Amino acid sequence: MVFSSAVFLFYFFPAFLLCYYALPWKNAVLLIASLVFYAWGEPRFVPLLMASAVLNYAFGRLVDAAATQQWRWRWLVAGVAANLAMLAWFKYMGFFADLLKQVGLLDDGLKLPAIVLPLGISFFTFQGISYLVDLYRRDIAVQSSFWRFAMYKSMFPQLIAGPIVRYSQIAADIDQRSIDNTRVWRGMQLFVLGLAQKVLIANTVAVYADRIFGVDASLLTPGVAWLGVACYAIQILFDFSGYSNMAIGIGHMIGFTFPPNFQRPYSARSVTEFWRRWHMSLSSWFRDYVYIPLGGNRGSPWRTYFNLALVFVLCGLWHGAAWTFVIWGCWHGALLVVERLGLGRLLARLPGPLAQAYTLLCVLLGWVFFRADDVPHTLKYLRAMFGMQASAVAPLAAWQLSFGSSAAIALVVGSILACWRWPAALPLGRTAWRAAAPVLVAAGFVLCVASLAAGTYNPFIYFRF
Image (cartoon, rainbow, N blue to C red):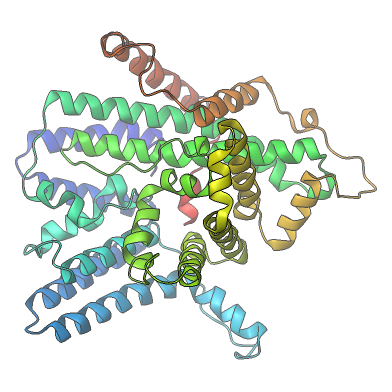
């Protein structure tokens, strides 16, 4: 079940809100609804989700109750290792087994069991690790109630695709939260905004991104190849940021404040700035729990470069167990190192649009690795983008892929919204927005429902991760 599905919009979510507002046991309602939500797509993994809650709750109590700092450290290491072992088994076992076979350290004939990736495992594993580390650092108090902790771990708005909500960010809301009409209305606006981003823009361009990346890259003209990666860039931004906005909006409607996850990343004027704006809950997680513990930028320059590179290799692996994700992480890590070596100072002196164009080019090239099926496909696609492909068959043009007016409008509107550096004060003031908001929200919701009713393409990218 995804937020942009008819089942969620017209059945699950209204029923949940009715029960949540009418009944006094709000944590219990949220826990039960979250387990139903997760079971709708992955019923066999509900025990795994609850096992993760039990594991992190138990290790959290052990860390908190340890008599000495040494034992606090030991319980922390054991808890983090247990989380990583769970993630490694389900997400990386096949990848590392193939790697060991390639280098001759594992028998080629060894057959591993087929392992299905549980929905949201990367997100709820990172939640558990941050909870244990924050307890060890004494940044938070231990949660004494298992059921409240299980509610936090399984909370359906952010369970599948984030943002990665740390316990410290909503600890007060778990015990006591207030809901008023102003906050509910704000949540509804954010939810409809995210739904429109997902349904009206991401879904529209997704058809053509998938179509272009799905054909033999040797058949693509440079123009069509660039069109494909541009469509994917808009798709992944509005798909993921739209889902995040819907999650944040639901959070407001039920009394929680989730952290922001996107801040117009394609308007960035360096790759460093891009990562301050893209998937902010993930980048800040790696900063606080990997980069800074490694030493951050407190050591020698070369140690800083190593820390950056390692963080982005891990960031690539977090997204998926494939060489394309590893290379994508290395690409961004290398770009950040180069900017620290001096390119960042040069970019700061360049005209803004030129620095932004450089950043977009780097990001678009990286998206090819992120989207392509494998490394050979990536290399072939890159050759097509730069006109280095030789094919005996006539290359495909955009019109042959049925790239129509609706896709062109979604791509242009999405590009403007994504790339324009919005001024701090918009021409329309708050009073005008307040007057227009109900009409815009209603119109946006109606358009989204009409689009979904027409059976439009409705994938969700981050289910892969």
